[in-house]
Length: 81
Image (cartoon, rainbow, N blue to C red; front, top):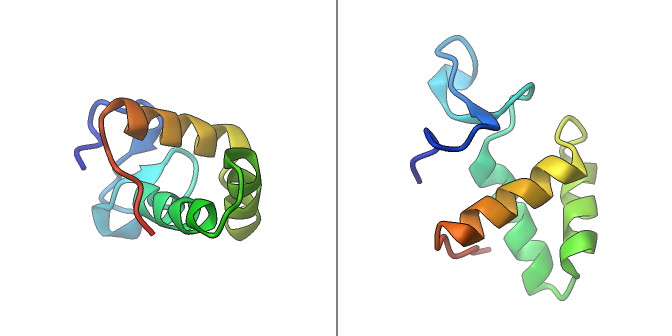
């Protein structure tokens, strides 16, 4: 996915070999989305899934997770586990 239009993602060649990461973290959007998708597939609600993903990646806020999911869904991105 092209992250250039999403304001909460940064690309810094000095971090994570230039991989897109959520601002202020070293966590890729794909990592968040993969874990979120798995949690929802396992039957968790959106809020429960966001809280679970936050527990895996404490540097990513629940709000960042929710915003990322909403952005991807608005872009037609299908969450997969």
